[in-house]
Length: 164
Image (cartoon, rainbow, N blue to C red; front, side):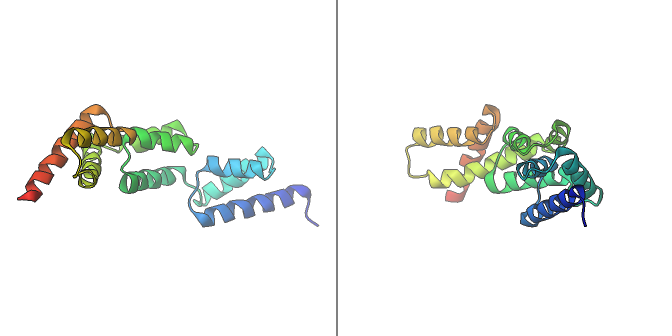
């Protein structure tokens, strides 16, 4: 017969495996899920540590995946990506490490691609309305004003080139 500790450990492993089947998770997200399932913190930390040892949980790789997906699909700026990682409970050192890999050129490139795409959607608007909406759109994605205006200039230059 299993002791209650063994039973809780088995339950915790099952919960973690089911969550990881759905997609990668940070160790903090897994700890929260185990807490919701009333798994004691010491058992949860042991299970998470064991899964980390066998590399089924890797917060740095998870953070990198979140960064890549956020920038590729949503066109988020470095600051917005950092907020998203913090919301997922990642350690500030991991966040800083992963965010430092995003160069200023990458930031401008992502902002320009987002601006080009959005500019096409706003093409029928008056220029001042279009620019106002484009500025707000890029700022909501976390880009600073310098990057926003440089991206808009580049997007408009590309739009002019494509007209010829």
